[in-house]
Each structure stands twice: as C-alpha cells, then as structure tokens.
Length: 187
Image (cartoon, rainbow, N blue to C red):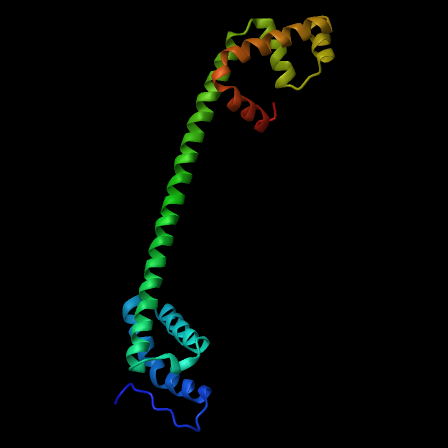
C-alpha cells in the first residue's frame, strides 16, 4: 500500500524518520509552495511539520497513511501561516492608522494651543506682557528684568503674578496641555 509505513524490526526510529523525510520532503515542499507562493516559507512549513513529527515521537503516532498525514499537516501549517500573516498585516495597518491619527490630532492641538497662547499673551496689559516675555522667553531673572525696565523687583514679581493669573484664567480649558507644551518647549 503506498504511503503506509512498514518498519522492519531492525530499523531504528532515526532511520525510519530519515527514510520518510527523504521520500516526502521535495513533494511536500513543492506542495507548500503552491499554497504559500513563497519558496522559503514553504521550506519552513515543511521543516516545522517534520520537527513536530520528530518531537512527538515519530511515525508510531500516525494512524493510516503517512503520506496523507504529512500532506494534511503541511496544508494546515501553511493555512495557519497565512492566517497569522493576515492578522499581522491587519494589526500593522491598525497601528499605522492610529499613529497617523494621533499625529494629526497632536498637530492640530499644538497649533490650536499656540494660537490660544498667542492670543492670551496679546490680551495681557503691555507691562505685564513685557515682563512675562522677558522672564519666560528670554529667561531673565526678576532682578535683571527690574534693572532693564527700571522697576523694583517687587513690581516685577507682582506683574508676573498678574500675568500668570490672567493666563491661567484664559487658558484654563487647556491647562494640562499648556503645562506639557511649556515643559516640552523649554518655557
């Protein structure tokens, strides 16, 4: 009977396995290629089938035709590989789409936030805005600002407090985002 394995009593499991491998490998590989359309993956699938067969104890576990068993095992391995590839592709597409969406939202949020910050700064009283900008954008200390503007340090402190209070009120809806924005941009 073709495909039935008849083991001579004197033959070792290794010898039987080697005989089955040599007899079926090329045809199984060709079969896997017809399913996967990929020679390397076809080889991988056939090797996996033989590896599982070896690890499970060999041909003694097979009921019926060895050839039928091997073809079915290769067929299933190939289909599982195809399913796995589709899942990976779907996941990759999902992640890429989510990243693009997040980047778009972030860009819009940053632009909107920048407009709101600029508007809030422009709404500050002139001296308040000047002191705030010198402190935050030029990174000057209160004493340096006081010296440049010929004001007392106490006036600079009061004006900074006023600027921060006004900005906090005007940007309250954006406060968590503003804090992150200011930290990331070195303000």
